[in-house]
Length: 232
Image (cartoon, rainbow, N blue to C red):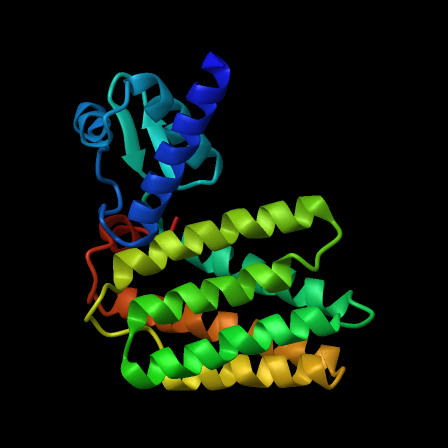
């Protein structure tokens, strides 16, 4: 019974911290104050440390000897490689489908409509949630568990990076309406069985986001200190 309690607490802390990281509540490179977070959540430091180790396995947190856990920071090269690898794997998953099940088409349509609605409202938070659900649904089609798990880690890192660049009420990397339209085109190609078109559109979209992100960093319009300081 005790093990179940510890496991449930660790899961709760892990999910809470991950959402905080994805929402931009912490800055890149910021030290995670274990005492403060544990007190805020009403838990001991043991499940908190376990949760931080899980986040480290996703590349969201790093540990420094005798200093504790820190939010990971990223160089320009890190960011380029993350997006380029994500683009290749997301495209690979689509290319290797014989067909897309009708239930998945219907689910993707729901998220596309949500994205269009949130884009018209300027609801960045809602848009991101629908976008995340769209990506998760496509990734679930992958029968290669190693590729699916690696892509999940990359997408988690992307969400951390984007949270550090944009936040509620600040400019987004791309126009939300244009992004929603691109997802609509991906969905339509999948529905019509044009898997190669869908894969190429997905890949081009991810690389377009990468280029927009790198341009913003190079222009110095963000607080990503290490990314501006080095490309290695």
